[in-house]
Amino acid sequence: MRILKLSIPLIALMLAAFPLGVGAVSSTSYQIIPEQGFLSTHGVEATSASYQLQGAISAVAGNPTSSSYEQETGEGFEFYCGDGFVDPAGAGGTPAAESCDGNALNGATCSTQGFASGTLTCSSTCAYVTSACNTGGGGGGGGGGGGSSAAVPDAPGVGDTIKTLGFSYKNSFLLFGTNSSTTTSLKVNDSSTGVTFPTTTSWQKTVTLAYGLNTFKIIASNSTGNSTETVYELYRRLVGDITQDSKVNDYDLSKLVKLWGGKDRGGDFNEDSVVNDYDFSMMVARWGTSV
Image (cartoon, rainbow, N blue to C red; front, side, top):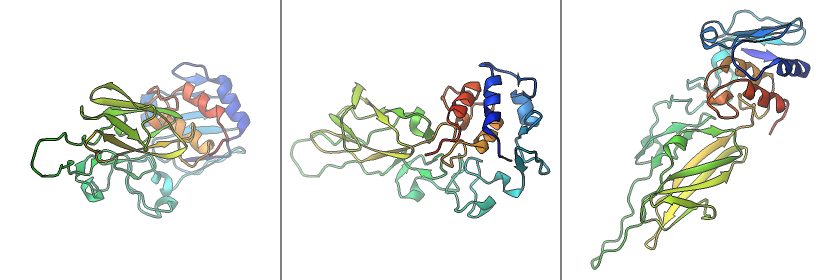
């Protein structure tokens, strides 16, 4: 479903009428019912004298219009990054095929991507994330005889809670993970500045995220040498840009209504594990912006 031509005055009206609470939201001209049971079977509908806004789980029939918007439906409705299906090139007007989508990896694994082992995941832009894949090999220390020497550190790990995030709306982000107890230094993108070791087997660093894909290359070192490289990727989205077209507009609003009351991270701009009026206010504050 696509909602077009939703006016800025309408957004201001909705923001003014939204209380910071839960449950149905209403004014003298419309009512939004975000309860999960209602959403999962019917959708969400808001009406006034000048518009009608509907959010539905599946495509709605017909092509309703008003003086302020046009709602279009068709077979392209389900084709977009984030629908949980790997769409082929040209599906629903998409310019290129998706490599993956959510948990759908199209049969790919770390091995098919040239790694020895690990867990392959999918980013918010429907591209493979190989940060949890391992190159294998172990540092191997040269075989000659004589006394034993310390081995190079194992490749640093990335924390389980951030390993498969894929994206964030934050501009500041805490990277963290595990490391060998023999590690004496750890670099993120060739810099050890800001890297700390809460314990002998853990590391962390606060990084700044730029809009788009951020790639972090992490290497541990000791007197013997360097570990293999761990690569972690995280995409930073513009707050309010659920559709990932680099701007905040009525398409994003229609998807926010669909996600209302749930925990989908796509609509959870303040990342508090619920899509609600706080996220709506953050979207309105950035209405019309782009990157």
